[in-house]
Length: 186
Image (tube, rainbow, N blue to C red; front, side):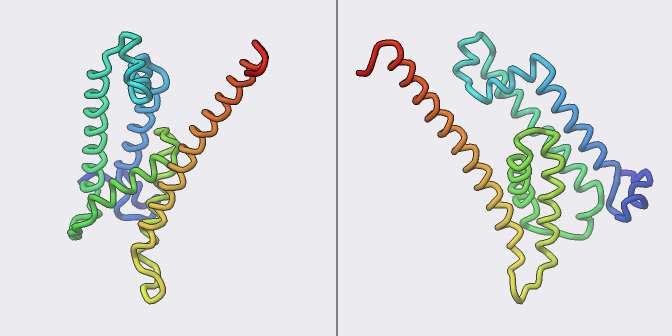
């Protein structure tokens, strides 16, 4: 079990351990690596366009493998913190692991795909998930929290899609106006 270091009394929660500060520190480290280092720039560039990265002389296959190793390590770190906190000590749920992955996607999208934003978004998503267990089951089903998380994912994906589409539309419009200025209308 992870030590509490007095956090359980501060937050009035017996499952509050040093895992929460450790997770925040891990998110800050990821943010620093992605935003402030050449290595992080290469990883982000590989995620955006691996063909452009290859053209620039970066090792796109190595970057993909390293990214998967880092993400797997962070997922294992998070699962270890969760289970070593003792919250799942006597509860065996078949759906707990897939729900965590689904909520992780929602938190990442809602956090703007930024490690620091994901901290706050995951706190929000966790409250939605926890609140789903307390709804009145005669009126609502307990999966209402999963529906809300799915709705968040779809809306975030829609905003991202619309942003890309709108930027392409503006680029084509600007390209058309440049052609008109150069050689007249065709």
